[in-house]
Amino acid sequence: MTTQSEGHIFKRFDKEMQQLHALVLQMGELAADQLQQSLKTLENEDPQTAQQVIENDARLNALDIQADEEITTMIAKRQPMAKDLREIIAVSKIVAELERSGDEARKIAGLTIRFFQPEDNHPPGEEILRDIFSLSEYVAEMLILSMKAFDTLNLSIAAEVLIKGQKLDGQLDSCLRRLSTFIMQDSRNIGHFIDIVLGIRALERFGGHATNIAGHIVFIKNGTDVRHVGDSAILASIKENQS
Amino acid sequence: MNTATSYDKQIIENDDPMENPDFKTVGTTTVSDPAMTCRGVNVFYADKQAIFDVSIDVGKNEVLSMIGPSGCGKSTLLRCLNRMNDTIDICKVEGEIKLEGENIYEQNLDVVLLRARVGMVFQKPNPFPKSVYDNVAYGVNLHGLATDKAHLDELVEKSLTNAGLWNEVKDRLHQPGTGLSGGQQQRLCIARAIAISPEIILMDEPCSALDPIATAKIEELIDELSKQYSICIVTHSMQQAARVSQRTAYFHLGKLIEVGPTDDIFTNPVHKLTEGYITGRFG
Image (cartoon, rainbow over all chains, first blue to last red; front, side):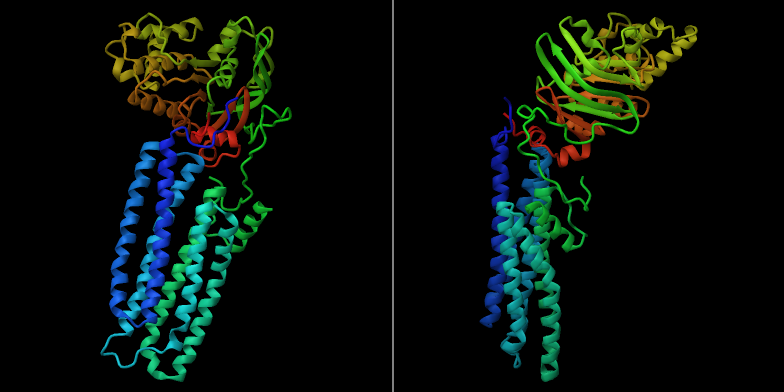
């Protein structure tokens, strides 16, 4: 009896999909690494390396272009349908999210350059930067999880990312509250305030991209577009499908 | 595409229609405004059953495409819709097929009249060995649809125009139809079918013998014709089904596995067999 087979009749198609899959994972790793490196430069007060991190973003941009080219060629050559079509469309969006994640990570390296110039006699103290570090850890975890969810198309992990995304707004609020306290304590911090808020905002966007990626994974798996609906509705549905 | 509010989608993996005697077609087989309805249709070639309990509607002014691997019964079902299977002695059709509420397998039904109401276009263009004009005029004369020569001329011109062929053949109306190109011959056959104002046009892989440009012209024509007629098309080209039809039915080994809006079937099919077939994971 003719039945569904494991692989595609065109083995080349499976191979191309695998290549694309690997490319996404590579971009995810690179984006997470860029954030990690940016934080290290902030921690080590090292503007020189920060410049290097900013320049390294070009690697992510190049992979973005390469992925786009591969996606266009695959659509033209293979005319994917159903699950394959959804995966290709979602991958094209995930790739864009990862490229933008890299841009946000670059902004943290930019903070190092602004804060730690040799002529600056009042760099921000460890305390005022604490939120940047804690929030970075949080959003880096989100990205790593979203890549894990993508690698195995695992909806439970995607749901974890979506839950973390829901809590991100609250985190942002408490960061801003703490920052206001520091400003009131020492008015010399006012000069750094805007930069740090922009940094926190960049990290919030970084986490937002990871949340979007989780949404794209739901689309690949279920074929449902979960953008622009409440996260709680999405989570309820995922749990329903899991049970 | 599913709406953002439905999250309950799950691929049906383990419902093997060949193993499960109670298998039910996935999706909605009926439409609110049907031109033709099939209920519990079984078809046998002698002892061998080719179609198992198929129920499906062809909606008015809709293009319904039937897809599936070779031997899945899609052409057999199509040929039941205008009793073309009557020409095969060993073929037996059970169940109910109604055209506008009237059972087409009634004993005293005029099959010639039925085939005028349910026209057919075949895989290979098969114009009569007559002139372009006579090919189209033949059915009109047979059914006595023209009042005089002027009326006949008018019907021929209208049919050729609607089939998108008039401009290409108006200066060679009295040359043999067989002298046209493959794509033109197929459009001539469509003109011949629509000249007698059918309600439904059945198409059995109408483009499989044509080049891509001629295919595109036929597909564009199908789109135009669907404004006036109901069309049921069997095709091996999934891209063609995706392009021309509003509803798609997927057949597998004589059973109707899944039917639904074409947009859903090609982006988000529900049954594992449908997904396997349309994504090319089949063997």
